[in-house]
Image (cartoon, rainbow, N blue to C red; front, side):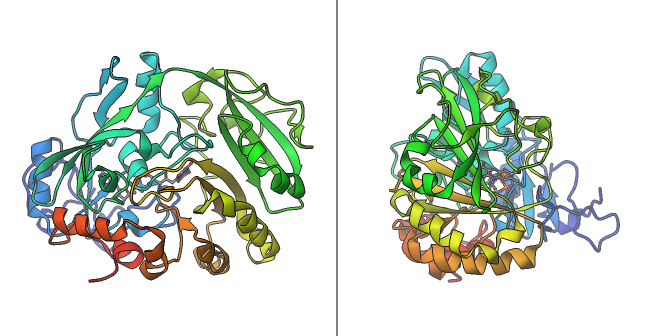
Length: 441
Ligand SMILES: Cc1cc2nc3c(=O)[nH]c(=O)nc-3n(C[C@H](O)[C@H](O)[C@H](O)COP(=O)(O)OP(=O)(O)OC[C@H]3O[C@@H](n4cnc5c(N)ncnc54)[C@H](O)[C@@H]3O)c2cc1C
């Protein structure tokens, strides 16, 4: 790994040296998980202690935090990056209060293993366990379930290093809290989080195949209410490919057929035809929550690996109209889709959450990794969805700019004021934030 300390912020104590961008001798390219975005940052800092991190924050003019780099856009990029992966810190469980305090860079898979060992669980997980808690929370990453909030709603408190190096704790119920949880990295470096936990539980997965479009539209609410967490996978063909029901013990028994869709006779991969070996077990075999809520198993390459993702969040009442409108223009995007997924997420109060104030249906696209073609398709898709009030997933690829989204978030002005207060010199701002959220002042 190349080391050019004079390029960095000049702070003592960062180990490992910066990763230099291509063009420098010994350069190491830094890309996102999908390999579709190349970071332009010229340094990656690796503080080992909170004191080193504070020193770095104080001395840097511009800094962004890198999580596990699973986002599909430039949200996490900037002149210089810091990873918290080498930061020391313990995980502490309070069984009475049903909370866990942890270093924010932990991956959900690591956290889940520790919790399971203590007989505890999280309310929900995303489709894969490899993402960092802080990065997921910063972008309102979600799983599915009509009564389940996104993963950020499990945050009870967080520790933040502000741009002046000051460390602040924000707790649920305090005035700034709802603005600071889904903050897209704009307020500072989140170093620790406290999450709600609950007693461990089991989940069993049942997959149904070949749902008719009419059945989806007619029984939309009943399908998504059929289990604790429900995912609908489709390739925009003549029928819906698969419906995955993730049931808890108290849920209704799994039906023999789901509005005409038949139970799959073997384990399935969400992308029809791919080997399900890296997917979590199905066929109704019960198992621990963390081995069933994600679609993909820890230790395996998740999803297809060669992909771009986009996702749009609509108010539940708008969902059928939106999906039907997309179905009508499917020739303009279908050939690029590896798979789409529909999920539901409960409303919350977090200012920049796509679920703020409304129960939501998320329409997701896993695309072939052809950025230009995907952007052309997104222009058509957004022409339909943005006027319907769609809010894009912050961590996935979308085109809508700050002006398009200004009306979508009623607390945006409050958030902008908070950014100004926490980071008056724009240390944590980047071009992406200006283009898609804050505008260039
Ligand atoms: C295969 C795959 C599957 C996915 N599945 C889902 C899914 O099921 N549901 C869903 O909603 N999304 C999903 N995503 C999207 C993913 O959850 C988000 O992009 C998420 O932000 C990734 O977290 P990360 O740690 O990789 O964050 P990064 O991409 O590294 O960063 C995202 C943002 O978080 C900020 N950030 C990271 N750490 C900190 C910190 N400590 N302090 C302050 N800011 C910080 C960064 O600065 C950046 O702005 C998936 C992505 C992939 C690649």
